Image (cartoon, rainbow, N blue to C red):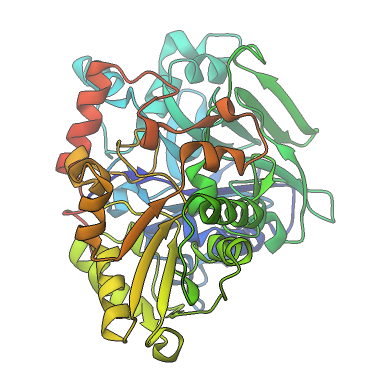
Amino acid sequence: MRDKKEECGIFGIYGDPQAVHKTYFAMHSLQHRGQESAGIATSDGDYINCFSGMGQVSRVFRAGRGILERLENPVAIGHVRYSTSGSSNLCNAQPFLSEYSRGQVAVAHNGNLINASLLRDEYEAYGAIFKTTNDIEIIVHLMAKPSHVSKPDPLGHVLNHLQGAYSLLFLFPDRIEAARDPYGIRPLCIGQTPEGAYCLASETCALDAIDAVYLRDVEPGEIVTLDRNGLSSRFFVTPGTITPGHCIFEHVYFAKQSSTIFGDNVHEVRKRCGAQLAREHFIDADVVIPVPDSGTSAAIGYAAQSGIPFDMGFVRSHYIGRTFIAPSQMMRDLAVRLKLTVVKNAVKGKRVVVVDDSVVRGTTTRGKIRSLRQAGAKEVHMRVACPPVKHPCFYGVDFPTYGELLANQKKTMPEIRDFLEVDSIGYLSIEGMLASASLPPDHYCTACWSGQYKIPVSSVANKFSMERHQMQLFDDVEL
């Protein structure tokens, strides 16, 4: 897996004396969404200050350096990054701070623009110089274009030029503006602190971290403004004209179990997926074990529905990050061995059902299966709480080229079973997965399983996206 980077976490808060420290704690709660870099930008009403660095939040803003104190202002936005576009290095860390004809702006982005290549080529042809390889800088160039600046709503006009998935935070010296793409692919919600300050976050778990209450989601195609007048909003597309395309893989893997996204609690959706998986692929066994942490809720559902006892066959080290978003296959394999230790007494001599949230490449999954065999498991049956991943995602999840996807390489279930070295394999159906969430089925994006992309991927954009997958598969990561 190389570099497909923008499944990130964003947070913003306006008008709170503790804005910087609350942003810091909110970013901690969103750390599962990105571990490569972290940054905070703040404003005193006249000037924006920004600091970002490589690594996790606690490393970038480690105690004793006085960084948070120097950033102290009543308005702040923060970002944690897992790259899907642009290489993993400091110049691509966010928020991205720039200055144009209307002054300073800092931008934080969660998503992926499928027309980024076309826009970049156009601006470079007219002499524009780019300092980074991420999508945000393209957005800033669009904002700076004189013909765009003169529009009645410059930001809304710019957003209508973007194709793809995006939840965006713009910090101007006097306000925060948040926007969500017309399909609402990536989550973004609004909260309010006990003191009355409004805030914005990728997930509700960030609101919980600072004792803020959830108010509502930013609607698809909506721009929300936080300023001294409070909260206001407008739409840059006509509401109700586009059927949403929420990324259901957020429920499958990325979002935290405690979060509520797209109207559903993540833990409950995963449990329902697990129960449906048991209905579709029951197997007589002695124990159900999850691959923690994102597979745990589904395993609970599978065990409850099947009547097979639940146990923790793997113990997770909390000092190792998410292996799905580790920078290279070698590092992912090493991280899996360090991250998951088998509880031998839970599996020795038993017929084991292993429930995982998803299987993408299959190499790390096969390593987990081998460790269970070595621990004495009599049988190992793999159950996956989503359908087989067969297609790349161009909207900000790190599903790589077709050739690297296990379900694309291995065309039949017996081939996948043999590759993973399990006694049986069962995937949740697309219909079963969609039935586990509460919105109508057509309100979710299932492209990585079905190949039916909500936003049409043009041949040019598709070519560029594939080139990204091929050239940036994490082989330029700075350690």
